[in-house]
Image (cartoon, rainbow, N blue to C red; front, side):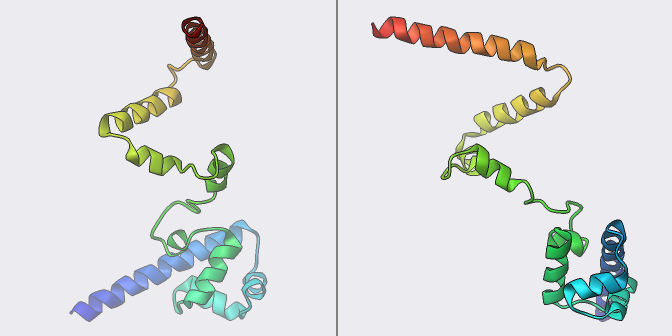
Length: 153
């Protein structure tokens, strides 16, 4: 009985992978033959992956993942996010080399984390008026700098 359930799950996974592969391929307007030549295999191999009659090796999965710029999790149907790491390089450009925003966030106490999350939600909301907020924020920074200069004299 257990082996039948495993076989059914394998078929569901193979078909899910096949559907995802076909969608990625057709979204790029590629034929099975075009894709096969990109990853060094035969067109009938791509067909067998798409129909769920054959499963790719890890090596082929990695080639497909790299070719389509998607995560392996997405490719095999575990995740709906095509590439969760795609924009991580943007964070690297915005922050100093040894600054990891997630690590810094996790080091904060729970109240501070909640405050940051609520602030993000507020900034994303429709109630947030960026121009008004920035001008008030700039005034507060200017006042703080002026107070600091006055006190230090």
